[in-house]
Length: 411
Image (cartoon, rainbow, N blue to C red):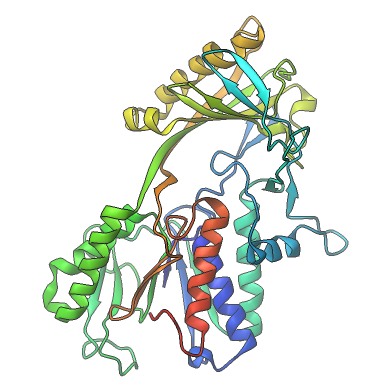
């Protein structure tokens, strides 16, 4: 079972299936079953896109990860395979975002070109986005998983809207598993401790934020009678380490549609400095394949809060968070360029989304965590490196380690 249908979990599945296609004997692949569970309606986690109609015009907002970079050969190879249209009726699934990026200082009201700006920067850096929305990256990963599943004859299932609260350990003697191992098998439980899924799983991959992984793993320790002492000790040690060495910070994302093109703003994306509430702003309409927006008089912008503001205002209603961030966007950003709300532009729609786990704050040095006695492994962008590429590499390296003849990881 893979718990978490974001980039890390899907990258893990893709790489495992690639290994099975290349070597059908790996894992004793005959009869291998992989099931992916995610609590949301769709895949992707923070690789998210929201669409809504504003005065008859459909606008889209990438309200999670704004873009991704590709420094590693593994991630570059994956992107290479999906950034070119492959035939009639197909289109590229990622494109470079060739926008103008600034650094804007709220205190001095100075806006300067970022050195890493793809357009005009002294040290330009390529930034990629999914098309027609950021969620396409996860859809592309899942599409490859499905194709590999057919080639390998591995059973692959997806469960969305599936909230898993904890795991229940079954001893090998009570499990229906055919495994001769003394490791436990695992059932997935709901909030009321009832089974969410028929049967049990021999192996678990947690591709979720660290605090959610801690919540899921704490309950088995309270039922020590179902675990061997060494297995319970293994879980306890990993829990202690995650609590002390891994953390993610929250953020609020504001999605606004305005009634005119804010051409007076000299950037498409801006890193905001010296603001207590705003860290990033982006003209979402300028990203590739976001058609039907700015040209029709409605422009979409995404504003991300600072982590400190999100911490202080985490339990606001989305409506109140939107109201406050719209006000700060007007007072701190647009007013510096001679624009004021209502007089210069009108906000037609304002929606806020709370990300409790937005960006990695403390990251483990290794790419994944393996619990061989428990048959559990953990991956995500809090292992090895942050952001989208870090999540991809974490799942990739976990799967690659398991595929080795003498694996450096074991679950």
